[in-house]
Every structure is written in structure tokens, then in C-alpha cells.
Amino acid sequence: MGKFKINGGKRLYGEVEVHGAKNSILPILAATILNEGVSVIHNCPRLKDVDSMIEILEHIGCKIDFNGRDIVVDARDVKDSEIPDNLMRTMRSSIFLMGALIARNKKAFISFPGGCDIGHRPIDLHLKGLKKLGVEIEESYGYIRCKGVRVRGNEIHLDLPSVGATENIMLAATLADGITVIRNAAKEPEIEDLQNFLNSMGARITGAGTNTIVIEGVKKLHDTEYTIIPDRIVAGTYLCAAAMTRGELTIVKALKEHLEPLISKLKETGCELKTGNDYIKITCNKRPKAVDMIVTLPYPGFPTDLQPQIVSVLSIAEGTSIVTETIFDNRFKYTEELVRMGADIKVEGRVAVIRGVDKITGAKVLAKDLRGGVALVIAGLGAEGTTVVEGAEHIDRGYESLEKALKSVGADIVRIM
Image 1 (cartoon, helix red, strand yellow):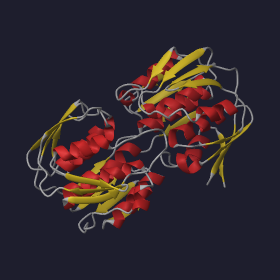
Image 2 (image 1 turned 60 degrees about the vertical axis):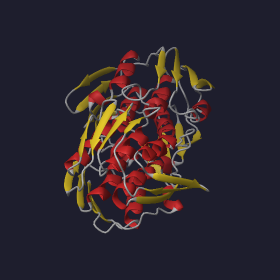
Image 3 (image 1 turned 90 degrees about the vertical axis):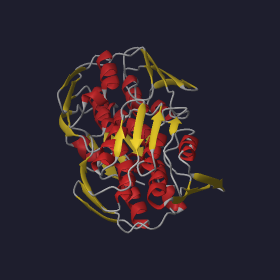
Image 4 (image 1 turned 90 degrees about the horizontal axis):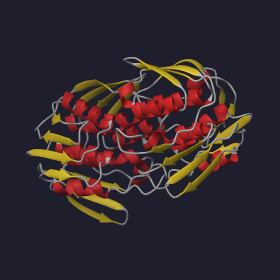
């Protein structure tokens, strides 16, 4: 149970590099079992969730070498199709093993996954889609037993553009008989990354990044080597940290096309942003201004995973901002901790009204989930005095050595036990 201790008021300045995308590496690691061979993946972040996925893969028979930024997965000896409850509960993304195991071993036996407590996150769309492919599913006592003796392509229309359901169906359909069409598919960049990884192994998938994905099932895949995309949420977090501290940062390995909604809102606050092929530079010389409205939406809308970070910035903005959360029903829990620091935030259901204050002050606060936790770190960077953010293990799920990255650009932050 680590903590971050932050002495606020230090202006961030310099250059910081973004590591590989958490939301890409996890489904891609699950996908490595499909080729029955060796996968070499570059630009991998060292995160708590990555460690958890590796532990699951090793449990089912993979041999894994994680050296520097490279992960080598040897999936030739995968035989087990059952994932113990204690491993499933470590993270939400363990659910991706369901589609992958069905494709590889024609069966899967798992419990419901864990992850951050940010509201109701049902997997009914995953199960509904897999049933459309001919998978027999039995749910009982918190466990899911799947049989996919003959997985067949089909047309699947998702009721909502769920990222997880889209990816799980893609994994299961890659080795299916016939053609699968996913309509109303999620369009996140990480889904396109999964498509590109699968295609590098010999899969035939088109359309990722649009609302219609077509998977032509193949009989066999082959070894591959692949580099994952940068983490857009980490890049966005650094941009918000710069805005909070009236800093000047160049975010290296950041793709502007993945962050247009945040860039637009930061410009509304008065920040200056310049972009290149693989960098974003932000300069904030004065107190940010409020924005009229932010509504979280599926990609390419404003990402829910950056909602807490921008709220931290808006807590010290000049004026009143309104933020509406449409993705998760309990994502504003972190605002109670911001209020402890002096923020003026009123939450009613899925809507937060943020009346900007001149300053917030350091306090002892608790990270209850990944993105809400990092929002408290951002608040601490801009606060007057010392902030202690407990629950660092939540933040470690999505940020590699966050304190080292922030310290390298001027923050006064240390990890304590």
C-alpha cells in the first residue's frame, strides 16, 4: 500500500516520454495464445495490470520473457482453459482471455473479472456476441463456462459500442469458420492496434477504427513481431498536469489524432498547444479558464479515462464548468477527495458542477481507482502545501513509475510506504 507525497506549486517544465498503451497491450497479450507459437511485442509498459496478465498467461502454459520494453510470449504449450478466480479478480482486462481461449482451445472456464470500482460494467454484450458465434455459455455462482466446439462467423450488432465486447468477439472470430461482421463496433485506437497485431500473425480483419469490423476466419496463425501504440491516456494525463501547474511540457511519443477532444478543451482553458507527428507541446502561463461543458462519449468523443484529470484542472479554473459522465455511473467518487483539498464541486448523478477556486491546498487523500487516483496526483502538483495520495497501487495499474516521470520535469514527488 504505497503513497505519493507531493509538495505542490512546482511548475512542470521539460520533456516527458509516453510509454506503450495499457489498453493495447492487455488484449494483445491475450491474443498471443492464438498463434500457437512465439510473439515478440515491443514498447511494452511495466504496469501492475501487465504483470497480472503475464501471471494468467503463465498459469495456462505460456513461457514469457519480459526484458526492457520487449515481451516474448511462447504460447506453444497452452493447454489449460481455466483461469482461477484469484487471477481473474486482479483486473478487468482478464476477460479478454475468454475469446482467446475459445478460439484456441474451444472452451473457457472463468469467473467474472475484477478491476476498478467505477460503476456497473456488465459483460452481457461479450456473452451475447459470443453466443452469436455459436459458443455455448453457462453462468452459475459467479463463473462462466464456455464451449465453442465449432465457432462460426455471423453478423453481430452491438447494442452499445463496447470496447471489451468488440475485442473479445474479434479474438474469438479470428479462427472461426466463415466471416464475422461486427456492427456498431467500438472505434478506439486500441482496437485498431489489436487488428493490426492479429493481422501481423496472418489474421484477415478490416474496418477497425470504423463502426463496422469484418473478420474472415483463418485456419492457422504464425509467429509475429509487433510494436504497440503510445498510451493516449498517459499522454493526456501529462497534458493536464502541465495545465494544472502552469507549466510547459513536450510530450514525446504522443499522437495528436488520438487526443483531439482533450486538446480542444485545453485550448478553451487558455493553454497553447503545438503538435507534430509524434509529439504535443503545451504551454500554460496563466490560470486556466472554465469550459462550458464536457460530455464523455465513446471514441472519438471525450474519453471517460481523461475525465477525472480534466476536472482537477477545472477545479482551479476561472469560472464554472459542467462535466457530464455518460460511460460509467460511479466515476465521480474521486471528487470527494478533491473537495477535501478545497475544490468546489457538486455532483448530482452523472453531472458534476465545478466552480473554480483561486487555489486548492494539500491534504491526505485516497486513490480509489486508477484514473481518479492520478487526478488526485495532478491536484497535488498544483496545490499549495503537501499532499499525500494513498492507494498508489491503483495508479500503478496504468502508469509506469509515475513519480519518476513527473520528477524528471520538475515535480517534487516521492513514493513512500
